[in-house]
Amino acid sequence: MKKVRKAVIPAAGLGTRVLPATKAMPKEMLPIVDKPAIQYIVEEAAAAGIEDILIITNRGKGLLEDHFDRAPELENHLSAQPGKAGVLRQVVDISRLANIWYVRQKETKGLGHAVNCARDFVDGEPFAVLYGDDVIIGKDPACGQLVRAYEEYGLGVVGVKEVSQEAIRKYSSLKVEPLRDNYFKCTDMVEKPLPGQELSLYSILGRCVLPPEIFEILDATQPGAGGEIQLTDAMKALARRDGMVAVDFTGKRYDMGSKLGVMQAGVEIALDHPEIGEAFRAYLKELAQNL
Image (cartoon, rainbow, N blue to C red; front, side):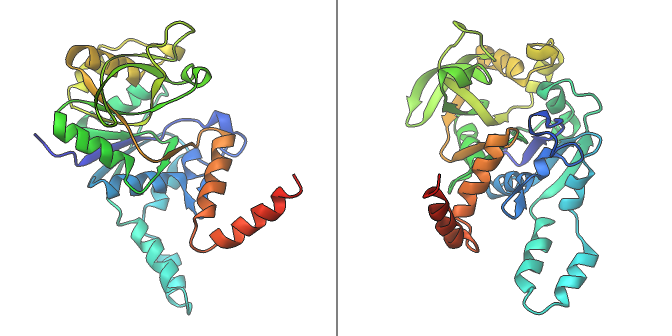
């Protein structure tokens, strides 16, 4: 079985739920303390052993490419400043996280269409998909948990969490049965289920590992929810045909496509930040006394 060494990050969405902040800045560049959301996602992939990453972008997302490129002027400035060696190292290391390529999704036709743009990059290998809206923080990279399941079972893998009855309407619902520990067998799924269509309260949240056969399925996938080509519909066909593995991953997931999710990520990650965590915690305690 081929090792999973490639990942695709769809980052072509318009960020309409966090306007007006995303009118001129990609939502993937929204900062969580001192790093943009997309960097957390790339770091997770790299920590899982991913070597090559393709980021799917569209018009107006050039900042993403600039962030992962070298910045000679900034580096020269920092190298000339006393006490800036640590910051300089952080800036340089960003460009060394992985081999990163970019391709534009010229029309926003859905997540399935975006992933299909990665066909040549994948080149017949299994690959991880890390949704650009979802930052997952944990000691064990969520992507790595899914990669291990793929390498054990040889089936497509989805990262899942149990969500509320209300939240399931916004995501997907999976038909699952226990395998062992936090592993489940998945044999069916539905995107954005209507009341009564739920298969369970387990939903895909931001991560999957797919075999290259998914592209043949995507070619035959018709527009679904929202009139878009849904990756979930292609994975449903894969699950019904071959079965998939659902991993209830460890780690905290933040929805960076929502204003509340952006604020939750900023607050909770700031509490553990080595530079400001202690002071920020004291500030919150003082603030909470007056709420």
